[in-house]
Length: 413
Image (cartoon, rainbow, N blue to C red; front, top):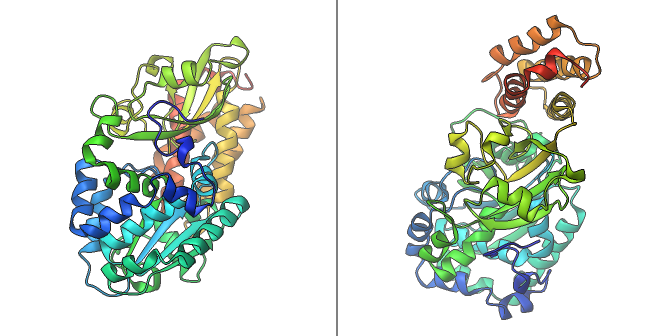
């Protein structure tokens, strides 16, 4: 499944939960450099242009700087492995197959912000990932490798694995904090941000699994090395979860900036059954649809944004001609409706109503009034929730209405 310039999926580091094999393959060198010059960690990530791989693409160094600048005392690092959105399956692979690079990245984060507790927050449905991480954490704890980390951090360092709530909204960072504090994972409005008031009301740095997995390699090989892995103005590599109507679905690590057409037709083997390409849900089913006119787009955060969509998690759900866009959107909006936590009535009721209308249209029972009602909901619902769930649901509905209006005018196609 590894592609060109593979780093995270390099077969040489795919050593499961064996710490000795990880270190013999060069693991630990990034942490050693971080311990030698902790003041260089954040500047190196800034020079590398590492961004958050959980969806937002926010510069990693900014998050780390904010947490590092908080007053000394107990701080937390949380690896967010909740991964629950349809079409996304990269983090579970990293946690299950290469847990030590994730742990090393999290420990480098702990050194950078002087945190004493590192928590690996993992979806409970990913039982193999939880088992692998618990075994790997035990190896690190028993190895004595944490002693030098503790010396630099200035406090005891504890690693733990915490199953998440398993809910889709449980991956939103304020919901992560509330769950780890023993409450229901209701997202809340910010500020305060987790770096200000997180787990146990202490400064907390939350990063996606893939983001942390990149960190050891950047510290080991340098910022220039990482930047040069990308294409054009993009930096590093990206894990793409490719699924849908392609001949060879799977997880591909490719240079950031690889073209959409190359991902689908070269690495993915082209369209299933020889059908024509119709559209792709980018970054999971909560973004604007890309169509055949976008096949030339480089897959990096800025280029995809220039097409009014988002790279998101790197999930690419490919749809062929002959597949109903309305039916697919109906499935995804039902997922969002089921995932709503219910604390924001416009979100809970709005996603339910959109799912109901989409189901009517997709099954040939819709009317022009249903289509108009759907369009009206897309106008009044954005921004009405405490997290991005309702906005994501609206985005994909509105995009499908604008891009494939004929499917709504002729329901059931």
